[in-house]
Image (cartoon, rainbow, N blue to C red; front, side):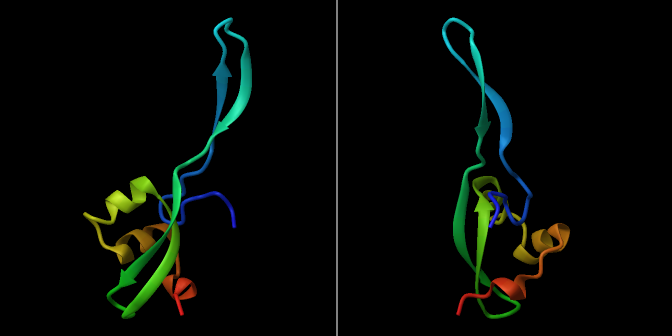
Length: 81
């Protein structure tokens, strides 16, 4: 599984770590991803998704199915048994 948010598509960002002497080394800024178990009202079961913390906050305001539809995600594949 890739290090990418399933709903928003957030992934790692290329950046530099800069020392005091201003030497620059390339590095990755990883997205804050969490495995989250979310209740799906339409299917009546839990769905397990890898989400960024921004997506978790967005779920408080918008429905899971609205975000999944935007992302083109089929939630039936991620049902927790």
